[in-house]
Every structure is written in C-alpha cells, then in structure tokens.
Picture (cartoon, rainbow, N blue to C red):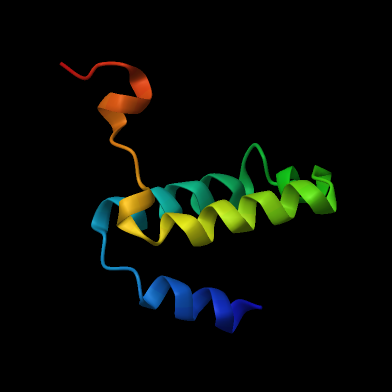
Length: 72
C-alpha cells in the first residue's frame, strides 16, 4: 500500500495539490483526526479514495474561489 501511495505522489506535478496532501497527512500524523480513517465505513473509505483518484485529473479540480463562492 505504501509503495502505491508513493508512486501516486511521485506522479503529481501540482504543487498546490502536493501541499494539500502534505497538510492533510501531517495534521493526522500525531494530532486530531489520527483515528479519522479507522472511523470511516468501507464505503466511505472507497469514496475518499475515488475522490483522490479523480483529483489527479486537473480537469476535475475546482478553484478555491468557486468552492468558497468568492468568484467574481
């Protein structure tokens, strides 16, 4: 599993996406949410993994302005 994750991360060229992944993992390494994954159902885990896979295609990404409704 770890080697598959490393391969995926090695293939990511988007600095913002890499920063987001780093922040996500770092926050859960020792702090709040460290039990987050274990609390999810198998279906929820699959949804998270699918969303991650889909996020690798930049055409699927949404700008932060659009997400937060600050688009002019």
